[in-house]
Length: 433
Image (cartoon, rainbow, N blue to C red; front, side, top):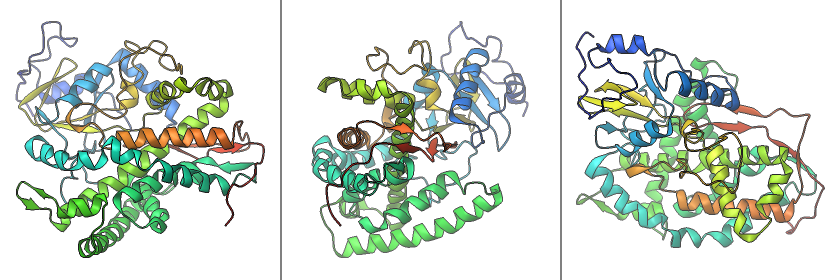
């Protein structure tokens, strides 16, 4: 491509990359080339270190492999791009390589929609995830947390990521959606394959597994939708089946895409925050104690843990002729990858960003996003985390990380940690059966 790029997005004279407005796209890509492996085998700490180095050396860079995308690293660039969804940027496709990996039929509803269409869906969905509806789940969440703890409390050890962090968010999500609780394990298996592939498998084998999982998920949700249509209840799935958006009810394909998003977002991200948090707290027992020093310390502690364990890395696509990202004129059709963990550790707003400070005074973190696509389930996630930490503290007041086990990090559009084995004094079950 040789077309010269003239930035029409209002970049100031103090562009950090002055002189780039006359470059062709190929020249711009070459000048700011620094490849980035979104789905690589790095550890989370190594990926964070790389992003920190990029922030200092080339805050916005072009990564050529896997269809190419731009990578932002600062809080300002990531937050401003997120805020401009529907105003120069669109969400579809939301993958850094532009490939539909989740198996949705079109754009996933509502996360990959923008503008008036997105607003209509959010107006329908937001009341279903209101603080009042979410708060009503607290007794059920506490029962489920203790059911899970009972399964390993007598052993004095567990794989926290698998035995608690993986199933726990599903209890509330399935209850809100009206999905069968006994299907949780299968849903979690599909989520893992769709978002992270198959551990230790080749890319080709992971892609083949995704294709199989997509077919199975499609059949599952189409059957579930028909059951809810025939026998509706007071759950999110029944409500959205009966709701009208833009004067019509949703098609089965649209309902499938919405259910798919709820499954992927609702099961994977909270699991990641819980597992990463417990891994950190197991190595820093003083912080585990500090969280519960006073009743008012828990909520700020949760926000700080959300900041340092943020797992999401969304992508936006330029829809205007040219948009400014960090002083670079990025043309229409280019993808901009936005690793939120990098924004949440920008030292401009978070002094000593790698330190966990429960009394930190800083800008609000971006773990739930910002702008029109701010996370629909933010109220639910915060409740899940508070209940989980409170019940774990009550039942397992002291624990350490098993030195014989090595946690396993997995990157991608969400960052997760598996194999988080903890050791603790055995306790008594609270319920039999």
